[in-house]
Image 1: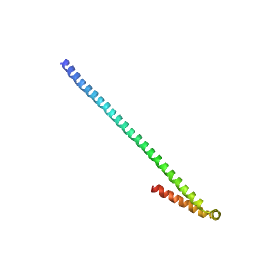
Image 2: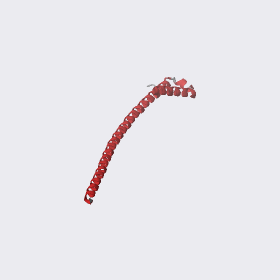
Image 3: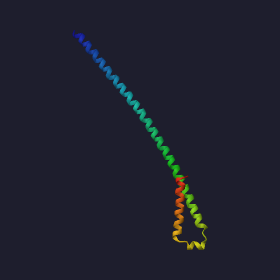
Image 4: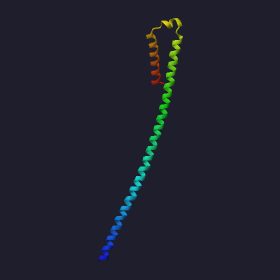
Length: 112
């Protein structure tokens, strides 16, 4: 009878150990899946960051070009003014031209 109890206890222990080992394997598999998913998420986030940086750089370049054109137009307008009247131009007129150029710049940036 004692031998039978030992066999039954041993079988029960074996079943429990197998359950523990199976649970550990499932946990390792789940961790591996989570790690792979985390790597995919990280790669996607890094690619999004690179795309955002490229778009930002393009937009900054565009804004610089627009600003350069606005400044060139403003300078061209100032150069069109005859030399004798240029000396008579009031500071307010210069500010008005600069403000006009800035307004055009803002309009071009907002509506390229």
